[in-house]
Every structure is written in structure tokens, then in C-alpha cells.
Image 1: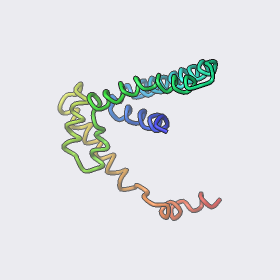
Image 2: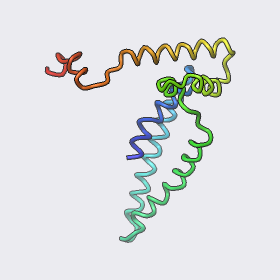
Image 3: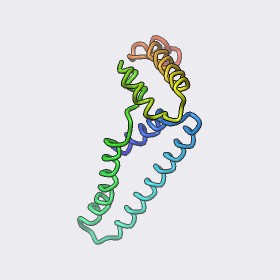
Amino acid sequence: MLYRGLVATVPIYLSEISDPRYRGLIGGISGCGISLGTMASNWVGYACSFAPYGPVQWRLPLGIQIPWGIIMFFGLITFMPNSPRHLIRNGKVEQARDEFKRIRRDLRPDEMHREFEIMAVQIEYEMEREITSYKEIFRLFRHRVLV
């Protein structure tokens, strides 16, 4: 379950914190990493199927995952910045501005301010048009739902 959560959220997070010029590249590298990790886990599972019947068949694949999980955990709590978009959506605009400055150090102050304002306006636009209930979905799109 954790794997599915990471596959769904990591590419979105990476696209939020990356330079717009390199978002596609970073998303592609992330997808390749996910694919290579899946392939490696399948090969480990296949190799462990040849182990004698017993706890090695399930403990070894599980044990191989633990160091990578620890590395990811410490990387997340020490190096990864908060998502400025998430902070803006929760009303923490100044904290979002600080995180954005930390992420986009390559921009001049006027460019940074302009890009941050564009992001804030986009989030405001999305929040105004956000569908928050199933009732609203059926009201707005009943012709699609009922066909």
C-alpha cells in the first residue's frame, strides 16, 4: 500500500518543486526509477522462490527493502522541502514563500516574486472551482454520469 502511495504522490511532489524547464525530465527519471525498482523487486521475489521452503522466502525480500526505506525516511525529514502549493492551499502563504525561495534559488528576486504570484493565483483559481462533494458532481455532470 505504501508503494502505491509513493507511486502516486512522488511524481506530483517532484513536479511541484522542480524548475518548469526540467519538470518533464525529472518526472521521467522518477518513472524510470519506479520501473527499475519494480523490476528489481520482481527479480528478488523470483530468486527467493528457489530458496528452501521456510522463512527465507519471505524474510529476505522484506529485509532487502528496509535499508532503502530508512534512507528515504531520513532524506524526507532532513532534505526535502515542504510543497509551496500545499502550504498556500492551507493558508500558510509566508511559509510557502520561504520554501519557494529555498527551492528556486536560481531565480532573481523579481522573477521569484512573479512566479510565486502566478502559482498563488493558479491555486486560488483551482480552489474557487473545486468540486467538494458527490452531489456537486452529479449536479454538474449528470449527463455524463447517467449515460
